[in-house]
Image 1 (cartoon, helix red, strand yellow):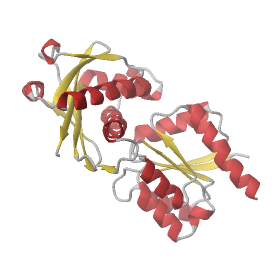
Image 2: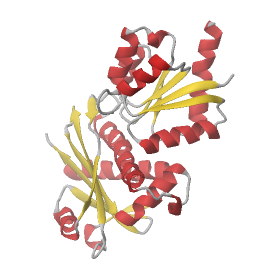
Image 3: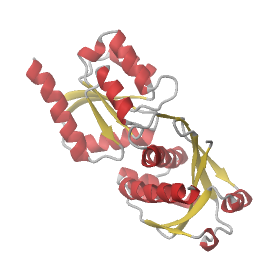
Image 4: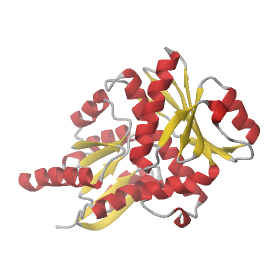
Length: 130
Length: 153
């Protein structure tokens, strides 16, 4: 099964690095979507089928925490797994994000192996639930 | 206290830069930095929360392409976009900042990072940073680098 993946980060270089890490980790990808902040990401989710979201915390317009809260409000967080990729993930913030439905947290800098591990765990949970 | 803070910030900076860009460095006295005639790019970002302040990284503009290339696993010649070079330095600062705050306050720190601002600075501006006690000096892959940490408390 190949996944439709959305990468949300205001840095183009981080979006490129996550894309490269997904490919190096041989994560099967069908479609890759990108957004520069949470508001753009919500627009993608409203228009396209997305299996998994990688999202930064610190972003302009709508940050990662606001994005996750919006996904919780509209119920999307229950069906679309979100993984936070950030360097701003202190323990209380990660705990708060997980309480709001975030599946996992990847600390920057990261390796392709860590990306693969999280994809396997996160999508495995969803497949088991089905 | 201030020396310990800057030592912690410096060692965290070197560790993160090594992991993120595969560039290796060491702390040096600022008097050893050769910056005459070198065009610098300065990235700065504010952070709020338990430990409010500003973190800055100044590097020779010519190594921003190498930083971007190393992050992406490419050759420096492949990085033509100025935006990509500035974005790369901003991202390095972003990652260093999160790690520095947690190294200083602990992993339970409550903090929020603003977006990095990246700009070119003049030789005069660079010399002002060297005289600023909030800045420490490093050599990163043979290039002079400045790390600034200004705490508001």
